[in-house]
Image (cartoon, rainbow, N blue to C red):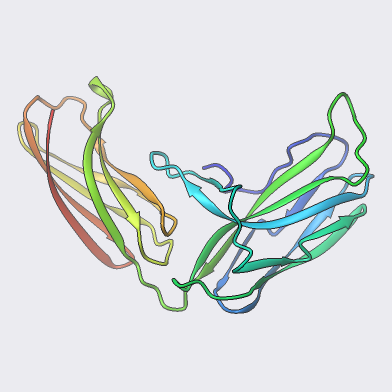
Length: 238
């Protein structure tokens, strides 16, 4: 999944920029919710900007990436937000200014750095765009899903049965389950486990349709999340 591992630099030169730790996880509360260190191993003074942004989740792959057009500054703010960083390191504090309605917040921490006095090297101006993770879990979990439509996507032997599911709860509890198919070629498939960011929609995979005969089918979805079970029965045709 993109932007889920350790942060990475966008430009290569002698030295670079890093953040440690790359992931912060706490229980959501007002006040300081974590600190991290920005390290500059170049020979230049860098202008650094720190912004907390929401995730966008790919419906088909469940991979997440930053929504670079939105900010979560009303809820969580870095201190300092913008600063000059000479070779060395500096700590940044994250402060939750107010609680979200859900009681949780899952976001990316964007750390953007560029030379304070840009110098072109080999035709490019070095800059770094790093992404860390912020997980502020709720004090009281409320796992919940909105189960949507069933569909068959793809063509021929690459057809796959999917179920649209939106996380309307406040946790990142993994989602799993089964798809029990009845019809000309009955089978039961396991749903690949996935975590869905609150508010986002992901297509759960009910298995490949390879080798299944044409005809009318019914599928019973059983979806599990955080100790809760959701069911959905739907008809489809191959």
